[in-house]
Image (cartoon, rainbow, N blue to C red):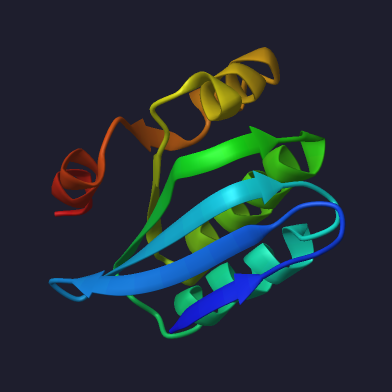
Length: 122
């Protein structure tokens, strides 16, 4: 399922591909309060299918505000409740810096690329 959402404030693109039964959700653009709900619903739809693991690829993110941090914490909580492991691909400052400042990097399973994230799901 591919989707592209353009808002007046911040564009975001969401695509999902299956890799060995693991959905890899790629989010590109900006995550802020104008689109966090859309991104969250997409993640929830994937988690609702009860996969053993989900990879959330944020390597295409150019900006992530506090609502993006909340989105990740909510996704982490919902995947844990569903018995699904969530691994986040984060390899650059627009994502890593806010996560480190909020100390969320201590809670999430972070990897530098999709290959490493998929290996962590095994």
